[in-house]
Image 1 (cartoon, helix red, strand yellow):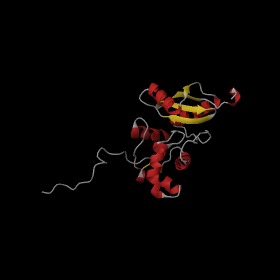
Image 2 (tube, rainbow, N blue to C red):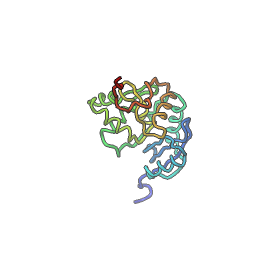
Image 3 (tube, rainbow, N blue to C red):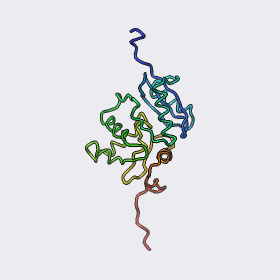
Image 4 (cartoon, one colour):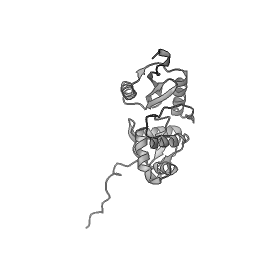
Length: 195
């Protein structure tokens, strides 16, 4: 196979945002993965490289444009990231549909897992929507932070920092959110002691 016909190599770079050093991986002009910041930039780089098989590189112009747009979004500008080309060929069809529906949520707005499931044809698939978003390969571009539990309850977020990171991202976008989960929300209900 000649060099001209060889498949593009996967590359990655880190970029500064108000949340910390995020990561982006690409092949040619197409994004194949992003990562929200871990505790240390070296950890973000290590995890993104291990997951995508990418090597560190300077981004080409198209990817620099994607980085600039994501950075602007994380600085509070209402940027639409729909122009960014992403390769989701490795995800199952249901997850791809979830990611497409999630990408359509505008900055500053939220949806529930159930609303996305209903949009996809079966409100009973809310848990499946949550599982697909937990495996989201391109956070920020697929704004899984904009998806909430029933009645706007903030539940689960697989990025470093968990729900706090989700809250911070929603606050940057100016989204109105429900209550943060309480310390004892997961405990079973009990009746008060009898006297």
